[in-house]
Length: 296
Ligand code: R5P
Image 1 (cartoon, rainbow, N blue to C red):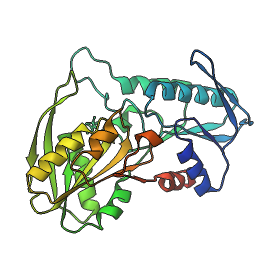
Image 2: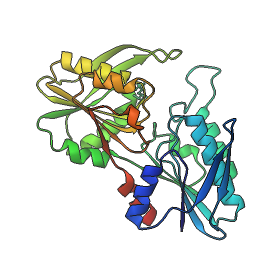
Image 3: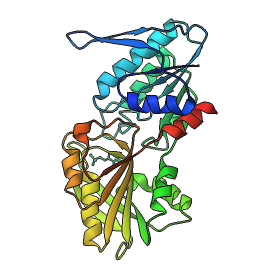
């Protein structure tokens, strides 16, 4: 089996290889002056099962184009199979038509990937339960929830919180992992055109408890900063947050650092540049879970 990594998440790729005691195969990713890229594999893949590791956080489009080109290079160079490890799949939030006339970005991405020809995909905490059904290719859908549960167990007197109604299934799953832990939900009302959050309402009792927000994606940080504010106003003694994908749009670090959240736990499904890190941030690695999935 041969392993290749795109440039979006090389640190995670190296960690996965470390767990599996394998090396990354050499590959040239040449960037022309105008930003276009060219790929050249510097290892033979004829009749080989290959693994391609590439996440698609910011810059999403650039990372996707690179992924398409590496996948193409692998297929046309004779790889027997390609397992794509894409821990974060960008565009997952546009998984259906919210308002008449919209596109379904995620369906377009999947069509392109399947047309080029991946044979299996491994990914994490997809935005909705329906997404795996969009794939014709076999999909291994992993979750960071068990890693989160291990940390959350250390808190006394906690209540789990979903910062929007879309996260209910996730919060129920985590509650079960933690022996039916208490949970609360926040009804978030987002303007569909501007994506701004209009209002939020808490359902459940958090008074005198440690509130633990759990979500799939952190982008601007506004959802969680607002949620933390409401939780504190309703008597939560402390607020922590656990999120799988640290997309971190510009300014998210400041929003989160200045928020009522004590500590912001995220995973490394997306590589977080040094200038996007902040003192409250703690990163949990998913490398071991991916290595286990590949071993199986
Ligand atoms: C939305 O449905 C997601 O689960 C996240 O809550 C959302 O993407 C977070 O975005 P932001 O950090 O920009 O508020």
